[in-house]
Image (cartoon, rainbow over all chains, first blue to last red; front, side, top):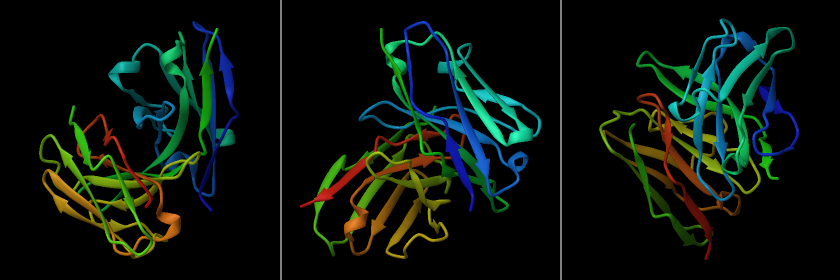
Length: 123
Length: 107
């Protein structure tokens, strides 16, 4: 079945960087964009950006421009999200999600999602 | 950016109840609206895409309707496994924005 499996929880100090991985299985990795969404504890869902695994092209939310980098390793069907200059407000669960499209009108949605990676930023 | 709102923010209901959640966009998004269910400690799960299309494997008690700025998610007969938080998300333009969520808990 289609599955995204993420790396384990991380604890980082303010100012450090974190790199989260997302391993895809059950489909052709290079055929679907991967997006990243984060969720602070008890809060809503915040989109961070996308990456095309085939070309490596990326697009980032303005809020994260300059701090986030999305990459991939196609040989192991894995996407990565690296966030730098971490601050306490970056403490959240980070999700990867597959971008799916359908229909002639360009409808799209996220499915499935990875299980999430908790990143805690604390001194 | 398009803003999304949901109402109510939370509701209490009993098994077997009909539940309706509303989502509103700050501008017209046609039918570019998705619904997700999230249970505590779990990732969101797609329920409905393109405002009214049921994702494969999702029970038929879930349905979506609406277009333009106003949308509805309906659960026709609430089941114990449906107690969760529900999010709408616009897919009309970048950045994709999620609603703040509606928490459905047990009365």
